[in-house]
Length: 211
Image (cartoon, rainbow, N blue to C red; front, side, top):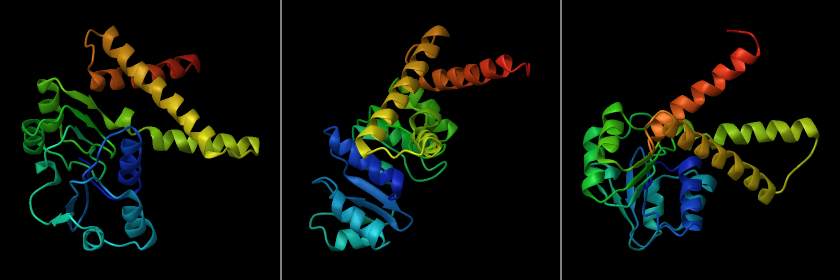
């Protein structure tokens, strides 16, 4: 279950499909689309990236897809939820609805899309919850890779850039896991991300004599 229809949502859908998942939703401010057969990625890119259209334009050209203008995209049952639209889009009630629908994984693709109540609900349920400060770090990481290319006056192909980004994200994941275990909360990616991030900044400040 994916929210949003911008760059993060579109390419989260693409990556999910590459990994064998079947994303069935996306959304914009006019409503959300449910495509039980699986999102037609090329059509979605045509509508949103080329034509700059609305999600309703996708439905008009995709048999079986439907536009829902009421309720929430989180009302749709699914195994994995990827909130990729906006801050605070997923509240405590929506979190409970997702859990009732069988959701076992939530990974944030927007900046703080889950409210504190939603995060607490997910953590109490014991599902895998990836906070945006870790799960959504790919954009910042890619900007750093672009700076590296510019500094070296080089140009990488897609495969090289993706491999470097994959390595960065794997390191972030491992740092979160290690920090959570170190502080007695194995599997808690929220604590792991907070502790790992704080420690990294603190170590740099100490190394530079700031504290």
